[in-house]
Structure formats: structure tokens, C-alpha cells
Image (tube, rainbow, N blue to C red; front, side, top):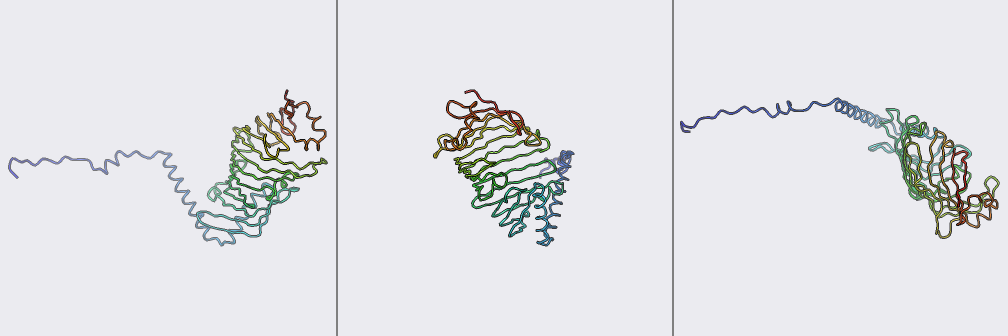
Length: 328
């Protein structure tokens, strides 16, 4: 190195780690709370998981069965099953085979090939009951989830090709002997004690509907066939708005014995029968049905339309709406 070459002083640069510490933004209060909640939730998860691993299978089965029994009892149901199976993986699931569900009397029992539940364990620590469920009858299946805390309910379902006759519905809930294939989905949430908080939607399709020949309340009902039915509704702030609601359709082959359509909305009430209707309905009957109900034409004559159908406005409480004929 020559004498003319001078050693240049090295400039002092701040250490990168020091710079990072100096410029790093301190966590907000929300971020600190969120971090604590995350650690607490993780601790609860491991506590529950390792507790379940230590429980004998029979004891765990009894715990879940008691939980299921309690949930069904709240709705007036009881059940029996021929077999049960418990599995523990990422969660706990409990499946019953050859199940008989008994609704409140005088309804007939509902019979299922399988009924399964998978409880949501962590929410149970905070007083919220619920989980996933599934049921099978023949080739049909319904899956869904439910969460409840007091009168707060959140539920959803999805159905594919469920045979209502094999399932035992509607005989379990109505005196009418009928059958059909149910598909569709829906969801609902809110406080059922405060209808204005309820929101949800449903799109349900019912095919191959047959109402058997029978006597209901002293009336002889002929066999009635309906090709399909659709219920497409939306609930917003306690108002149920009908987007499409019909039984039967024009041009069906063979012709449907009954065709009914509804439009309008329903304002929900804590007691469903107290809900307020604001609906318009239009319906027609096959000659065979009219022959079986000799007084139908006379009773509905005021609402008869040029095409032979009948149309009325239905307004007022669901338990006693006021029908007003629609002018032709």
C-alpha cells in the first residue's frame, strides 16, 4: 500500500436487529387479547383431547348418549337403537344403527338405518350445545349441524333422496298417510323467542308425492298424486318471504290431482300459529278430487277464475286467517 493511500474510516451503521426493534410497532390491545384467547383455546382443546383419551370407551359412550338423549328430550323425543359405535379421530363421533325415534304421542315412530352425531366439544365449555348430525334411511341421507344456547339457535341441513315413507314421515307428525322423495338444503339462525332476530333460507324439492286413500276427520280422501313440490323461501328479520312455493305443476304427465301456489310473506311470531299471513294462493283440482268433495265448488265459488282454478288472499293470524276472493 502506498503512502498516498489513506485508510478511510468505517462509518457506523445501526445494527439491523437494533433497527428492527426500534421500528417494530407494538401490538395493539386487540392483538394481545386475540393471542391470549388463541392460547387458552388451544389449552382447552388439548385438555379435552387428552381427557377423552383417558376415558374408558363405555363411559364415553354413556356420556355422549346422555348428551344426545338430553337434546332430543328437549324436543319431546326419545330413541332406541340396536347397535352403537364410537370413534375418536380429529373429533368424537357416535353412530347408532337400526334406530327408532319416538316423537311425542300420538305421532308414529321414525325408523332410521343410521343416526350419527359428532358433538362440538369446545363450545360446550361455554354453555353452547350442538354439533354435526347425519341420518340415513334406505338410499336417502340427511346431514346437518345445530348449535343452541338458550333460545339462540343456529342450524343447517342438506337432504338427498330421502324417502319419507321409509322414514315414517309425515305419519310421525300428521294424521295423513303420504309418501314422497325429499331433497334440498336450508339454514336458520336467531333467537326463537325474538322472531325479528331470525334469518335463514331454504330450498326444498319433494318428488313423487302420493297421498293414500284414507279417511281424515270423517272425510273420505281419494288417492291423490302430485308430480313434485317446491318450497323456496328466505327469512330476513323475522319475515318469511316466499320466492316460490307450489304443489304440482301445469303440464305434468299424468296430470296432478291438486295444484297449489302461494306468494307473499309471513311475519313470524314466537308461537307459529300467531304468525301473521299476507299471502295469495291459487289452486285447482282434478275431476276425481272434485267428485269426492261435492261441496268444494260451492264453498269456493266466490274465488273461481276463468280457467277453472280458485284464488284467494289470506291475511291475518295463521290460526284464523281471513280469506278474500280474488276477482276474476
